Image (cartoon, rainbow over all chains, first blue to last red; front, top):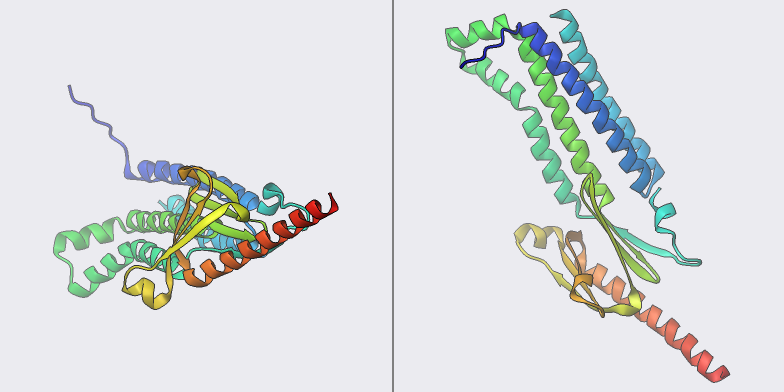
Length: 70
Length: 190
C-alpha cells in the first residue's frame, strides 16, 4: 500500500514557516525565562536580549516576506 | 535575578564569580557561525566554480525557496548560538567568604546548583592539560569536601585555575580563622 501526498511547494514552505515560527516563539519564552531567572547581571541580560532580537527578528521578517511573495 | 534565589546570608560577601574560559565560548560560537554560513558558502562556491546546467536551472527556478531554507538555517543557527551563550554565561562558580556555590547549566532544562561551606572543604585540585589550555591558562578544578563522594565538584576549562585555587585556599583559611576565633571567644566567656 502506498501513500502519496500532492502538496504544492508554496504550501509546504508556508507550513514550514509556521512550524519554525512556533519553535521560535517557544524558544524565546524559554530563553527569556532562563535569563530573567538565573542571570547574575541585569546589564548582560539586557544586552543578550538586544543582540538576540537584533539578529533573529530581521531573519523572521525576511522569512515572512519570502513566504508572502511565494 | 539569581541572587534573589540563592539568598546570601547576612553579611556574606561575594569574592568572585568564575565562568569557563572565553576560549570555550569563542570556539563554540565560531563553529555555530560557520555552520550558519554553510548555505551561503555553498552558494558562493557554486557561483565561483561554475554550476552544471541542472543545478543552475534549480537555482533559478527555486530561488525563493532556497532563500527561505537558507534563512531558516541561519535562524536556527542563531538560536543555537544563543543556547550556547546561555549555557556559558549561566554556568558559574560563585565564591563567597563563607561558601562556594557551583551552578552547572547543562541544558535549558537541566540545571544543577550545589553549595558547600568553606570550612568543610578538604582538598582542591587543579589540572591543566594540553597545549591550548597551558598557553591560555585554563584547566579543571576539583573541590572535595569532608562529606560523601557525591559532594565533589568538578568544573572544566576554568580560567587561571592556580589563582583560583589560591583564592579559595585563602578564603578557606580566613573562614577557619574566623570560626576558630569565635569558638575561642565562646570557650573563654564560658
